[in-house]
Amino acid sequence: LQVTFPEIARTLETLSAATPAAETHGCLCGALCMSAAYSIERWFEEIIPEPQDIEEGERRPLGLLFTDTVDALRGEQMDFQPLLPDDQEALEQRAIALAQWCQGFLYGFGSCQPARAEPLPPDVQEILRDFTHIGQAIVDVGESGEEEEQAYAEVVEYVRAGVQLIHDELAEARERDWVTSAAG
Image (cartoon, rainbow, N blue to C red):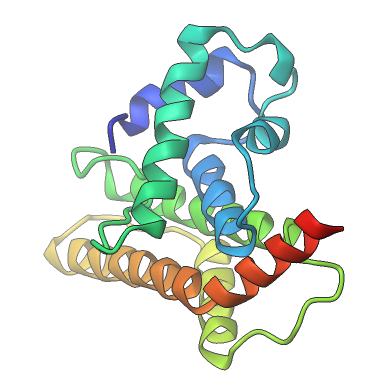
């Protein structure tokens, strides 16, 4: 990503956004998995109280995040990464951010479902259930040792790969819904 977690967090704070940076990015990713036509303007409406008041300096980091996320999800490199705090942050803060990210993903995914949605593939349903559990997890890290760090890294990798799988699995449905909405 061309922007960092702290940069996005500061920008959202400046804009009085109600959602934290991780949740905001999760919302974007969930929406992009469901909708081929999801625009940056719609994302701004979801996350910022007064989107019409965004100045260029505030728009730039969010625009870069939007573009980088679209490119990563739609690209063939499989280089998508959820926007989360760096490893220098306390494990507890990173785990909280991961839970928020999953909550945001589920919100974005659900808010973009078409009115006559077809059943989701079973593997997508399973990942969404897992994201629900991750989003509801109570974080009590205590001493952050090597085992806890490894477990966190594995969950982040599962989320990363799960999002990429969901995006790929729903490609045909996204395209069909986009064509249908563009024609209607």
